[in-house]
Amino acid sequence: MVHRIADVAEAGGLMGMGSGRFFGFVIGGAVPASLAADWLVTAWDQNTGLFAPSPATSVMEEIAGRWLVGMLGLPEHSSFAFVTGGQMANTTALAAARHHVLAAAGWDVELDGLAGSPPIRLVVSDEVHVTVPRGARLLGLGTRTIEKVAVDANGAMIPSDLERVLSEGNAGPTIVCCQAGNINTGALDPTGELADIAHAHDAWLHVDGAIGLWAAASRPSPLLGLERADSWSTDAHKWLNVPYDCGITICRHPDSHRAAMTVTASYLVQAAPGTDRDPVDWNPEFSRRARGVPVYAALASLGRSGVAEIVDRCCAHARRFAELLAVEPDVVVLNDVVLNQVLVRFLAPGGSEEDHDARTCAVIAAVQSNGTCWLGGSIWRGLAVMRISVSNYATTDADVEASVASIISAARAAAIPV
Ligand SMILES: Cc1ncc(COP(=O)(O)O)c(C=O)c1O
Image 1 (cartoon, protein in one colour):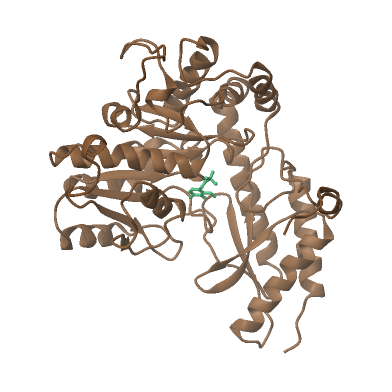
Image 2 (tube, protein in one colour):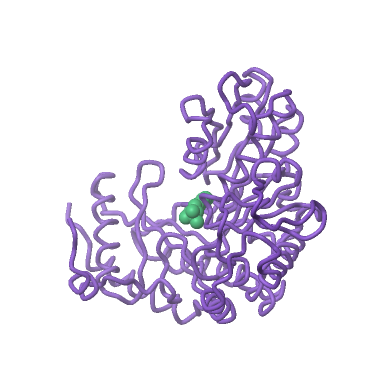
């Protein structure tokens, strides 16, 4: 069905996703410097696949990547790539991992493909984000043999269960994917412990940190253990608050990263290895916009302390949502609010789980139509929940208070008789 643009535009065809009162999905706004830089990227219209034709944008991206690696406390020598989003950041990291674990088994996947290769075990948590299996599909690993590790009550991977899964299966090329920032609860997997276990089994550990890698800007690295993994992905267009599209892959093993991505052609002007940085060596894209430049601008304007401050402020707002809502009768916060995500369920007193589901969905719909703020729903452990994600740098205390008032008034109006 093809809609008329005027019809959909007039009927709420654009959402206020950049607003400090937008709490749906995991959507950041755009800090002013990054928005201006994004306009410049469009106006300059530089193809930033190679250094030679666009040294200025290439160098800005290189500096931004180095700053990120330092700010997140990851190994200094790590390589990186600015890709379109978390999906491609995960896929690029998995491609590097695929190269690395197969090379260790004596197989050149770039040359020989996967037909006849040693099988790769892909081990993920029960709470894996859908983009990891999709990455496995794109890379020819498939999803049928994916092995799942159990999670705790807040959705974080349980290290002892990873040990069990790895010990029970065959040794051989293995990639483990954990996450920093569960899409529903915000839970951070215990990466340090998981890295020790994965490495004891010669496995590669990837961290899908689309949401939560940014926590490393404010929390001491050893606490999270993030720096002990082999690769990381994150989204600048989420919590760093730069415009779409901007995801980032970071890799502890630059040789494997480069081997998985690099490409040459006679007409290209390519730098000799170890000299200037050609993005095409690290990215799955060939021609590309200079999407790292808004990251450069965001980091230059915020500094490390500014990024940490956004993370801390959003987490404090999330805790405030939880506190204010949990004191209402028949309103329960289902998750441990360890990051910026809050899951809320609205009970129908004396009712069944279906009644609670119905009331929860009614409250979400009422808040959405009221317009004070926007948030969505999800299913957590089979139960309907309201899902609040505080990812915008501009959200104020007053925004939280007004949004809570709107939620409470919707909840009071949606008391479903049972
Ligand atoms: C944990 C996690 N991984 C990956 C993604 C995919 O990111 P993107 O939508 O930028 O491709 C998301 C998106 O919400 C996510 O939450």
